[in-house]
Length: 98
Image 1 (cartoon, rainbow, N blue to C red):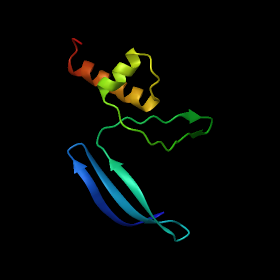
Image 2: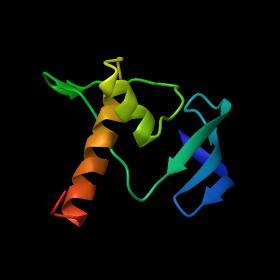
Image 3: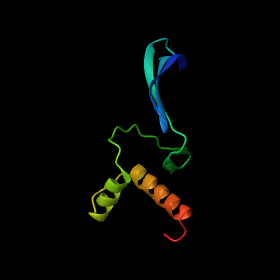
């Protein structure tokens, strides 16, 4: 895949979203959305000799929403749990009395 052109479609202090025009190896054109973030959590399941990558489309939840789902014993996806855990660890390291 070759990037032909790129443009920023959204930007704020926490992230940049850009759209890349690409050319596939067979010559066909396409677009590819890219999210750039300085801090993030990434969960990649490893199995045998490789990793499992899953394309996922979902609405992002706030930390308060995730905590509420955990308290009410609703099912929460692994990336959200990982993000909440990292957030809680950051809070406790910023304030050792937590």
